[in-house]
Image 1 (cartoon, rainbow, N blue to C red):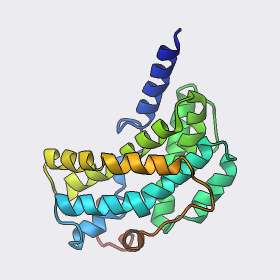
Image 2 (cartoon, one colour; image 1 turned 90 degrees about the vertical axis):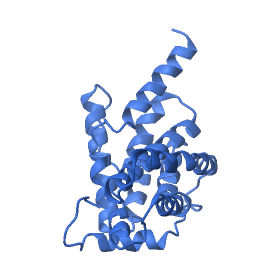
Image 3 (spheres, rainbow, N blue to C red; image 1 turned 90 degrees about the horizontal axis):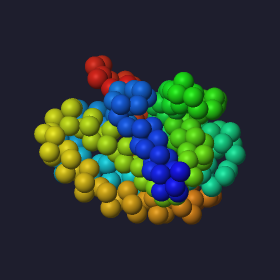
Image 4 (spheres, rainbow, N blue to C red; image 1 turned 60 degrees about the vertical axis):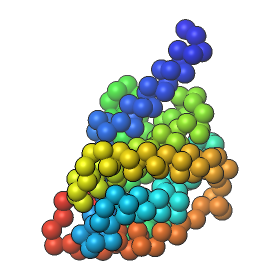
Length: 216
């Protein structure tokens, strides 16, 4: 087997893990976006792009990229898992990452992979991805693409937007994803920061909505 085929197989495995068809239940989470739409903070494609850019640059996207990078760098997964839980900005954010992370490790084990304890999603993905021997930038970029793709899908369904409009938003965020992946390569615990306060507050208030489509 050539080095190229090994790399391709690893990339296909990672793509499968981060696919919408992988049974994480990601479609049920909006990361607080549902309330932002309901209250009119996000009304259209432009508003969705602005919101998601902030999530990437200063919110949950940045936090997940840092946690994932730390694990890929060889940090103790249990330590980073504790950190992930400690810095979750709300009850819903904690549930979102733990529920998906638990589903991830369970499914990977059922596929014949190593059985691991439940972790926050970026920690679980990082721990499993270590054995793939892929460049960390590739793993982080594809993880962020999956993360944002799910939120674009939530926006398409709830704003609502046309499918093409949603895909244009996603395409325009590719540069942000690349830039954040590059930044995350130098991640340290001390450099892990977050500043998407509107997103955090929206996630906190989401659980009090009278009618909800999404879990978060």
